[in-house]
Length: 610
Image (cartoon, rainbow, N blue to C red; front, side, top):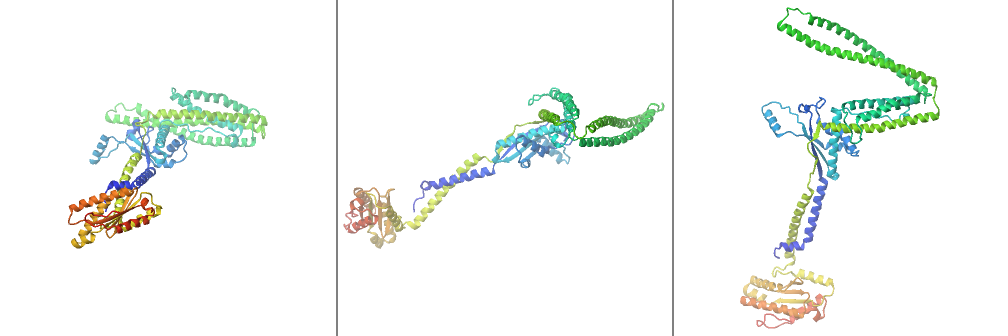
C-alpha cells in the first residue's frame, strides 16, 4: 500500500478542501446574518431632588417605564418618519437601574440584618435591541429619538404644561354659520393668547433657535390678531348681517341661552349654599375670638398654653376652610355676572339674526366673508405650528435641568461577523484538510485491496486492464510510446528450493526495482505469474534500451548482494514508431512476442533485451 503522505492527499484533493472551506464560510456568514442583532444603550440621570425619594418633579410617584410607553415610542417613530414597528420597538426596549457599588453593598448589609432598604436610584440604562437587517445606525437613531421624545414628554408631563389644543379648520365645511365660525376662531385665538401670556411672563428671555421667535414675539402676534382681525371678522359678519341659514343659527343661539339659564340656576343654588356656610363659620369664629381675647386673667400654666395652642390649630384649619369658601363664592359670583352679560349679548344677536330672515347677504358678500374666514383659519394653523415648535424646544431645554444623558449612545452587535468568519474559515479549512486526508487514505485502502497485487505491490491485472481501456479510448498512441514486458523466471526455482515466502519476497524486490524505472508519465503494473508490464510515454527505442540497461545493472548489484537468491528475468520492449503500431493492444502483442522469442542463457547476463 502507498505510504501515508499528507501533502500528497492535500495536493490531490485540494478542490475538496477549497469547496469545504468556502461552503463552511458561507454557512457561517448566513448564520451571522440571520441571527445578528444590534443593541443600542444610553444612560440617563434624573436631576431633581425628589427622585431620591421616588417622586417626579410634580410630587407624583416616579415611573421610569414611561420611557418606552406608547406615547413616547409613537412620537419618536413619527419624528423619524416611520409609522410602523411601534409595538416591536416597545417589546425590545428595556430600562435597567444603575446602582453604585457602595450602595449595593449597603443594601446587601441591610438585607442581611433583616432591615428594609428603600433606595431609589437616580440613574438608569435604556437599551434597545433591533434586528440585524435594520443596521446599527437604525438602532442608534431610534434610541436617540426615544430619549429625545421622552425628555420632551417628561417635561410637559411633570414640569411644564404642553400646548394641547389644535387650531380649528374646515369650519365652513362642517356646517357652522359665519358667526359661529368667527366665534370658534376667537376662542382658539384666546386660548393660545392666554398660554403665551403665561409663558412670556415666566420665561421672558427664551428665544427659539428653530423658529427665531420668543414668547413675547408670539404673544404680540396673537394679540394683534385678537385686537384687529377678530373684531374685523365680527364686524363683517354683522354687516348685513351675513347669514347662511338664519333659522338654524337662531335655534343654536336659543339653545345656548336656555343652557345658560339652566347653568345659572345651578350656580345660584351653590351660591346660596356657600352663603349659609360662610354665615355659620362667621358666627363660630366670633365665639372663638371672644374666648381668645376675653379669657380669665387668672388662667396660667400648662393648661392655659395647651388651650391656646389647640384653639390656634383649630382656628388655622377653620381659617383655611373659610378662605376656600370665600374664593369659591367669589368665583361663582363672577361666573354668574359673566354669564348674564354673555346671555344678554347672545339675546341681542338672536334678535338681530331673527330680523334677517332666512338668509342674509348675497353671494358676493358670502364669498368675501368665507374667504376671510378661511384665510384666518390658515393663519392660525401656520402660527400654531410655530408656537408648537417653540414650545417643544423650550420643553427640551427645560428638561436639561431635570433629565440628562450621562453617556453617549453606544451600539454593538450581538455577533462579531468578521471574527466568526475568520474562525469559520480556519475551522472549515482544517475540516477540509482532514476530509481530504480521510478520503485520500480511504482511496489508498480501496486501491490496495482492489487494484494492488499483494505479491508485487504493483497495480494488479484489473488496474492494467483499466489502463489499457483508457488508452484505447484515447485513440491512437502518440509517437515514442513504449510498451515493456518483464518476466521473473526464477520464481519457480526459488519457491521449490526455499519456499513460497522466499520466492514471493524476491519477486517483490524485483517488482520494486522495475517500479523504480517509472516516472510520472509512466505506468507499471503486474500481469500475474511473475509478469510485469510497463507503459512509457515520450520514450523511444534508444531510451528504452537505456532503461533496460539501468535495470540490468541494478539486478546484477542485487544478485551480488544476495548470491543465494539470484534474480533471473527476461525483458522486451516495443516502441510505436519502430513497430508502426499505434494501438495499445497491437503494440503490447509485439512486446510479448519479443519476450517469448528472447531465449538467451543465464547467468552470464541476467536478462534478455530485444
